Amino acid sequence: MFSRLNDFLQYICLLFISLCLSITVSACSEDEPALQLTPPPSGQTQVLFIGSSYFAYNDLPGIFENLAEAGDKEVFIHQVIPLGTYLDYHSTSSNTISMINSRNWDMVILQGVGRIVAYPEDAQFDLGSVLNSLEQTIHNNSSDTEIMFCMPWAFEDGMLWTVGGTDDYFDMQQRIYDNTLAYPDLVDIVISPVGWAWNTIMLEQPPEHYLFMADWNHPSLHGSYLTACVIYSSVFRESVEGTSFLAGLPENEASHFQSVASSIVMDSLDLWRLNQQD
Image (cartoon, rainbow, N blue to C red; front, side, top):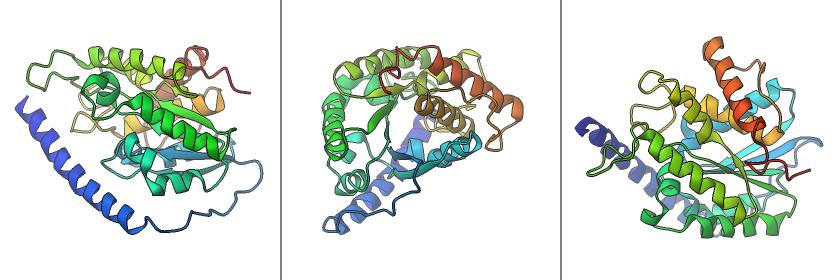
C-alpha cells in the first residue's frame, strides 16, 4: 500500500506541474482568434479527441488513426488533451471551445476519468452538468456532430490503496459501468465501452501492470491499444478484427485485444446507444 501511495503522490506532483504549465499557456492565449484549421479532403471522417493524460499516454489518437488507416478509413484527427485536466476544464476552456468551433466535426470523443465516474459524490464538479455544457457547445457549432463518451477504467487496485477503501478493481469498474450507462438518458451522447473491455481482460488475470503503467492508473501500451480498438469499433460500428496495425505488440496479444474490443462493442450496440445514429 505504501508503494502504491508513493507512486500516486509522485504522479500527482507531475500532474500539478503539467497543470500549471497548461494554465499558463491557456492564460496567454485567451485573446487569440478562433482557430481556423485547413479543411480536410472530402470524404474524411473528422474526429476530435478531448481529454488529458489518459488519451495522451502512448498517443492514443495516433494509435486510433493508424488503426483507421489500416482499416481503409479516411480520417482527420485532432486533439485537445492537456495533462492534469478534467472535462470541467474543457467545458469552459477558450482553447477547447475554439477547437470545437474550428470545423464541423463528425465525432467528438470525450475522455472519462474512473474515480470521478465511480464516485460522483466525491468529485469537485457534477459530470452530468459538465457533459450537458459540452454537448450544448458542440451542437451549437454543428447539430450533426456525434458526441462519444469513453467509459473509463478503474484503478488496477481499485480503492484498496486508500485509507478505509474497500472497492477492488472489479467493484470500482462495476460502479463506473452502472454510472456511465445513465449518462445517455441525461445528455445526447453515445458510449464507447472502453472500461468494460478492460474489465474483460482483467478477468483473465493478466500480469501486474499489463494494461496499466506502474502508477496503477495510466494505460500501458497494451491498455492504449485496447482502448483504441474499442474506439475504432465504436466510431465505425464494425469489427476491428484483422486490422494489420499492431502498435508494436505481439500479434497474438493485439489480435486478442481486437477480438475483445469488437465483441464488447458489436454485441451490445443498443446498450451503448450506438444504434441510434444513421
